[in-house]
Length: 158
Image: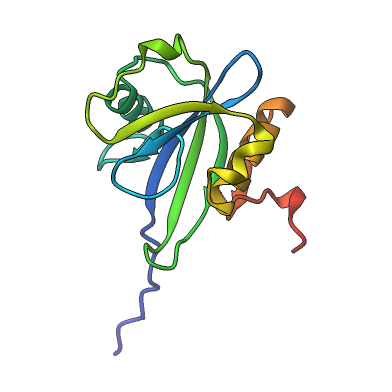
C-alpha cells in the first residue's frame, strides 16, 4: 500500500499596509531606512496576528500615531520571485490626524509625504503603484477589491 501524495500547500507571507489621505486626496507615502524607494505605512503580519491588527500595530510603531483602520480596500496576490508567495492587504486609514504628529520612533522610516495619484510612479515600484490605484478605485466605488500583482479582475486582460 502506498501513501497518497499530499499536495504542497501555499505558505504565503502576509503583509498589511494603510492608505492615509489628505484633504486634496493625496496618499501618504513613507521612506524606509532599510530599503530603497518609498512605500505605504505597514509591514508583515506576525504569527497569530490578524492583518488588521498588524496594520494598526505597524502604524503605531512606524508613525507614532494610534488609529483605527477601517475596512480593507484590496487583497492582492503578489508573489515575488525572491520572496515567494505573498498576500498583501491594504486598509483604509482615512485622514491622518495631523501630519505634524508623525514621529519615527522605531527608526524604520526617515520621511513621510503626501503624493498625488498622478505622481505615484515617480516614487513607487510599478506593482505597488498598481496596488494603490486599485485600492483607491475600491475606496471610490465603496467595494473592496481582489487583485493579482496589483491588478483587479476587471482591469486584467486574462
